[in-house]
Image (cartoon, rainbow over all chains, first blue to last red):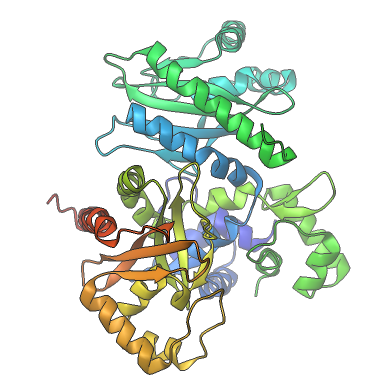
Length: 246
Length: 246
């Protein structure tokens, strides 16, 4: 692996900044080569040196990264619709995609005084612990489902860990009903509802979800907002890819 | 410079994808080492190989990049306020910061049928050609202003290129009035208004701007929405950094 990447990877999720010693240790590199490489990366803006001499990921990397038209093209198409959903529901509105065994959140819009929610943009969460994850898993190919159900589901917050057979039943229901509801899986006070954003060749390319207070949750009202928005995003994606104007 | 970075840098703004030959040529590397490194980077998800065998920046880079708490912390604090502005003005609402001699846009919210606007998230534009840029330049330290006015302003769309003295007068007005207005600088039909987001130590840490149709532009109404939002973002930033709850 490129040593630049090894250094970037030392900043795992939730790590805000690291000392040079921590970077050296985590990257498993010699002190002198870590020192040289971190200096080069800081000069390029890939790392940023803080006044306390610790390092964090630099903004230049974000700038480069935004040049990918892949999933960020989806985000671009979806944004106005996410805003519409957020304007009505006035809680967290999220866009997620499948990434390995996790949901990767491409966007999160939140109101001023939202219910508790641990999702961060660019962050990932386990599939079985989130409504987005259940949607994405329910629409995954059989090999992916087998692989994920074949390994032990991680112990995450208050998320249930059904047996593989029970999970297959849940996924079949999610597919049939067209939504996933997770009540208090991560925090008792918060629940989430997700619907699939269908791709042009079938299957879900992404999930659209909201995180709302568990108390007084009105599933039908939420679905009445989420479903048309997901459909509009799917149509927008289709015309972005194929030039259709329908 | 790290060769990983040299390869990433071949994807300049506006480049969606490149062939292996183009990457090799732009990076000025030998074919065999480019081939090996591009393969490694694709395996790590830093690059993504398309079905037509061209490459684009991979989503993994974006995931890593989102771990910087720097300017993206500002984006996080600002988002609900950007949404408020966008809900009222219903045109493009943007958050920009100074990055070298350019404005870097951290966020852009847009309505469904917005006026023409070339800003992209993660993209940059010249300071003198944008309302955000004029705001950021007007609040820059004298050395930065000297440096930028000392070099030839780039020829960009229909943006005027005042002499250094005329520019200094414009910047003084922008500081005095607390806003910058650029009418049809980039496209005749679109105009922009920006206000500063003031930092805890004085100076502008960012700009909040809207791009609206030139025809029928109502400056006072726009400022009445922008100014309180910019102030709320500044307060939010202060409490995020210092733990103040005011």
